[in-house]
Image (cartoon, rainbow, N blue to C red; front, top):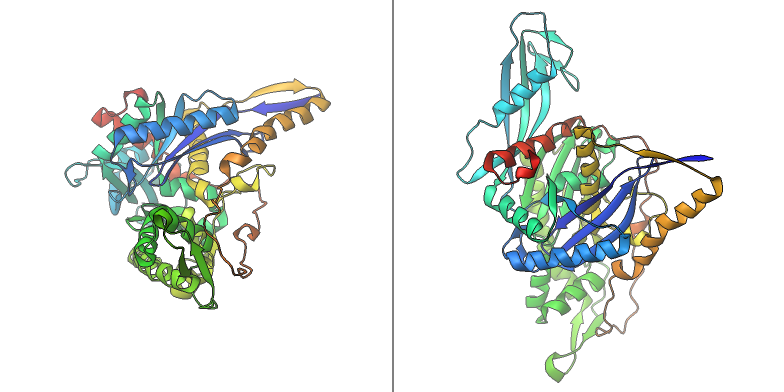
Length: 481
């Protein structure tokens, strides 16, 4: 007889500028996530991370959820949703709480009182505080490691990282989710979700900058000593690269996207002028020939602008010389060839491409260990964190015969195998290239992390509850009550 532990199924809904993805996952007894199903749909109602058309977004959400249900065999009714967009901003603030007598012991309610005080600070009209993240604590001007609870003193002070966003943007997301027939269990900042799936505990302790290059925005999150130090959103990302290729090569947008994905290089060095791509003409016109090197020059110019903004944010945070672990790049835009070398050359920081592999079971298909799913997988991880905070994360032990364990293992892996056709992007053979492309370094060759220790998430403590409070104040999501 063998004991099998089962946790509840959690669904992450990533509402992005280019795609909407619904990912169904279930945690096993070792803390690993088993992806049961993935549904994707083109996103036409979102621009730069914000919903601009309710009906189009609702339709895309329904399509993605239906596909995820078919793949996983699970009826989806509740989801954890990510929020991003250029309306997201952050700032630093400090707070002081007087304890009274010099030998007063700090308790949890003292820390909560300081966090609640941060929600009272003034912000711009139409904005609300989304998250209040404690950073450093001090008791009587003496630094405290991790948490001050249990220490004695007369005055407690702390520095906080405060993230704000537009109430209207969150209301639009909530409206789209509810019109799709779903219940929103939590709203999570997407850079934090991505960091949960691609960053290791050692990187966050040493100091690392996460750069998530999506379709409409590039999100930045900087960690040091296992604490988030800075967040920023840049309104330039993969879509602007596509627009540049469309204008520079004078092709259709769908052709520009395919050229970027299949033949795009971040560096033009080493490419020959004689390497030519032949694409169909419009409405029966003659085929058009495009130089691979010219295509790389177009991409390179825009990437330089994007990473100038990224490096400016890193320098503005004050941690540019404290990032021992360098930079981790994830998201769909991270799949450009030679992007790692480009970033290291222009920033001087050691760089790797971030894959959401650390918390996934080993049997997960390689197609699912893709940077484009980093946010969705992170939403599942943070969903389990919130259930744990609420005290709702419970498992049921079942006794089964040893041979039946293998059968269960096959059942779990089978839906993932069925997703291969859905996840794989089929490139229509309408673009021809007569040359033999040079051997490119494979992003999937990055070694998968094999340590199973749980990441310390003290900086996340109370974050999702703060989101709940934010919604309660504006009556955005009464289900939190």
